[in-house]
Image 1 (spheres, rainbow, N blue to C red):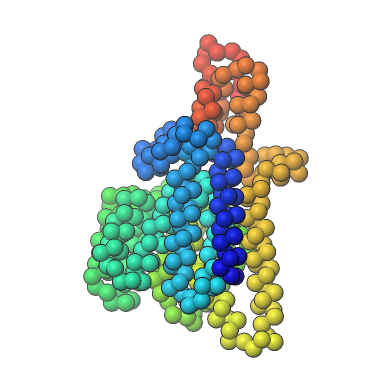
Image 2 (image 1 turned 90 degrees about the horizontal axis):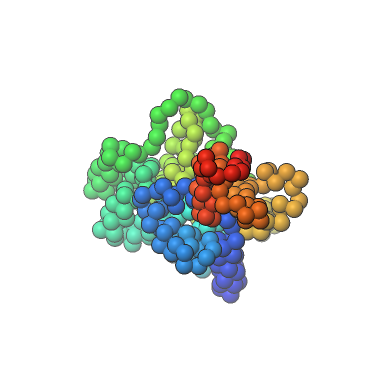
Length: 369
């Protein structure tokens, strides 16, 4: 990928993200955060409240950090590649991942965690220990499940025999577990492995996830393991182990796993370069198929609205929970009603954002979903 192609892509990508953030109605989890969260997400969603009159009112900070993550990933990729063209390719793949697109547009904590993880990797590569420590402390307060990150660092620094950073990692692991909730491992044991696998497939897109898993496994067996691999592999394995007994919250693990997509490109390049040109055709064809599937998945997310016209049952659309309350609001406006009683609290929060309150006993008629 050339310099010009990359910057054209970034320009179009930015427009697509803004379009998606503006056009997509408020989601159930977004509305719940908007009205009930008291931490970082509360301040982020209210920072631009009532300023734009569209989805940017509560999504702009997440969009800005999402674009910042693209830049930080490019900077990090230069640690692994000497040629800018390889960094452009890795960054393009990262930007097109469905998980990155949704994290950049929809209200969630993952976009901030990704920023801190990428920043940590860059600081570590430049041996800025003070900066690493600051980022670790920020992660401790920003992410309730930061214990995942600290466990992976503890393992890495133990193998590297870095006693100073190992001690800090162990200390932060203990603090995260004792005072910041850490991971929720309570409740009745119930296997959710297949559900987790489906979430990872949705996060990466099917073919990209298969190759990503292969890349992590190959590095484990044959290649040199760096800090990024330890962070990603540890988070991935922990999520698998926990899924055998309970439901896993994807935003707890995804930020630590998805940043290692650069390793996938590293493995692909090594696989390709050790073969003569006449034996590279199959690998290049595989690359085109995987990239084609990734681009297709990204376009489906960005231009998802036309899919409603292709489905007989609109409830089968992945974005239906975002649009249903908005459609209800339009119907209520047409009949001059300003209240609605929903069975699900999250839907009630969505309607509240549009100025539709829950019906009281004196309000008639009532509409129930």
